[in-house]
Image (spheres, one colour):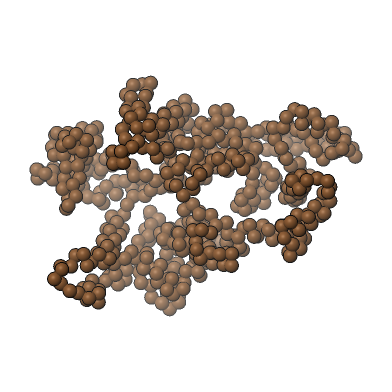
Length: 595
């Protein structure tokens, strides 16, 4: 594996799993607080960081950090026990380094209480090692072993010898090509997966031509096991419209799907299920009940008598809050905007007026050529109902209705997987991406100020910019119009014009350039608390489980201060000699003592 140099063909799956978690997701794992059910069905909170510290203590060691758990917000905060270390490094790094030094990470990560959370964490980070945490083996090797055992294939045979062994095992005609033989083997494999449902037919082809149907029916006497039937297939008449909301279908393939649908719900292994979006979330409601027909057949497989028949029951109709016309407008407008912004000087043309001309990236002197993806969401502000959710690029869910081909599947992924800006048609940008809100957040700041007593009619004179330390922060109009300002504005006008200076003043409690007091001063805690009250620290609750919704979270002022101090301390330690006077000579030991 190219991203993990220590993983080779000789290393074991368990050790590889530990390596992957440690090098990619250990910090994320230690930041988690997970709600789980215990053996009695009671809801408990599992805190990986707390369990690691407990493991350290059980070994007779002293943890270098303490942990504080906020059960209300499911967050944790680590603090150094040694106050001298408080500003030198992040407590999580200290804990990890200590656990590494004492060789505790393997037992911790592979602990039965932790391994599932660890697996979920690396999957959230886009890494799927395909390791079975129940058997501590790569899934492909588990499947291979089970497959070899099932067909009694001698383990010393190579691939070619195994293929010839199976041809003989299945009594496949020697005159058939190796490609035809492999197709027959795959059909035997599908039949075998039916298990005790072997009496149920399997689908081997969809959408065959009329001429093929005629040939099959002509030779029905020679191939009694083959039948042609007309079956309902999910069809999306509007193609890509709302694809990321609706989701797509696929065959049962993942171990979790086999357990849930085949073992628990008694689906056929050959069934197609909802994989993502609404299709997955409401699989039970949409599926309906399959029909059943018990028949008598003659020696050639022809039906001679229908003993019993139960008609299929269609699934329920599902009505969404989505307005299909608005969804169409959102998708078309998003595509149009992205195409125009990439041109440089392109113009967004609206049938309702208000055309907008795009500029270029002034720093790079070129159009925004990487603006290839985006999202638009429209919500009814009175009810919270979702009216439209558009992502670009999208995909056609009809590709998945009967099982997607490998060529079509590959086409849905970028040529360069490591390019973070490459368009990804399957990626639901709206719910999977946490992005800074920009000036829309001014409404939260304004509400926090109103709660502290600010009159919305209070005017503040926009002076263009403020200086904080060595940095200058200007209002957008000051940057765009070479020193322009909004003049004196009240809260209504500041929101209308997106006046940065007005909101700078709220944080200062005064006009930072004139010194005029405004009677109200809001701090970061006020803004953070208001954000939480508005639900910005929580997921929206959209009725889509796959893909999982990402919540950005409201920053924790204490954590931000601690991390900032830690980063500043680390920077100064690494660059300390740049800040020592030339005539002062200090040894490294002396510098360390002064720190």
